[in-house]
Image (cartoon, rainbow, N blue to C red; front, side, top):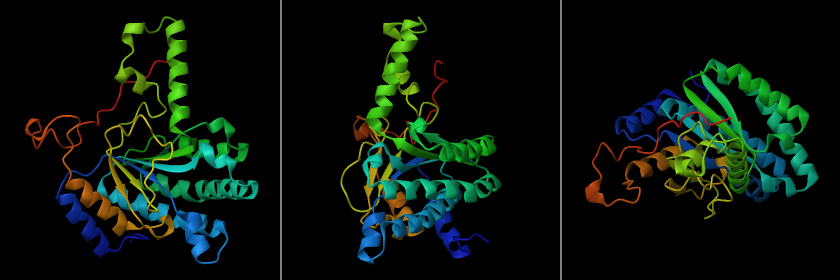
Length: 273
């Protein structure tokens, strides 16, 4: 039996799946750990620790829903500016989580990937991360993508640099550069753009997250703080998504029922080295 999902919960998930139109790629801004701890008179680390339990439940729920990619905003570029003791604690939690969860991810056929300025991470974090990525790289059921030391602006600037390098090496011409090619040079170049962006904690901002990729993502803001976020909150977001008409700049009359279902999900071709 699942650790988090009882047979009753799995039945709820199956009812949602029967309706169809499950987002193939969900991106989440996991906000509210600090506020959750503060409300309880606890140190901020307690919120982060409880938030890890939420991650486990959300990963398991997404796997059962048939979500193909789950991208979690785990640690932003701006988070480096937080107090040193909090950053150190977060790094230790990331190491412990990777160490503890990799075998479980592998057993459940989940592939781990990462995006972000990984070179800035401590050596011990990179070692655990790369070990987990290598161990799970052949898994197919779902991709769990961790945004670590990540920002959308960083991602775009890095893509520009790669484009300039490719152009200087005569691998591409100026005329080759279009939205599709630019997308290939982003850190998410081998992934579909998110269909659904979820933010916990009630704040109405995107916090420098996947700025290019979420151009046509549906957005769901939950007032629930991340440590209290659970399968019910996730299913609420999915149900809301299923009711929406995704037009991608068109009008309703141009959208057929078939074409409205996750149009922007084609895997992109391999990017130029």
